[in-house]
Image (tube, rainbow, N blue to C red):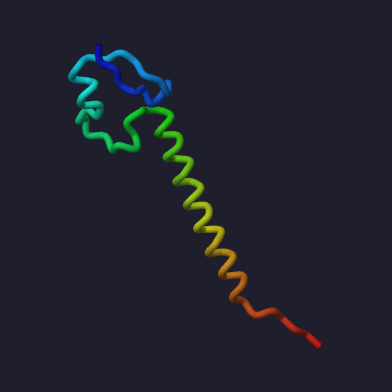
Length: 72
């Protein structure tokens, strides 16, 4: 009997010899999107937070670079 690790269920499941020895099938998908919907949502969330953080940092740098008006 052969086993492979199920990344989604986080446990060992029964498998054929071919599936146990070659767990990654060549289907043209990047490795970070192999598990389907959960991986797509994590990827999109990460990209949204990265772009949002970059925009926030650029705005903060722009505001910090403006001289303060000191009227006396």
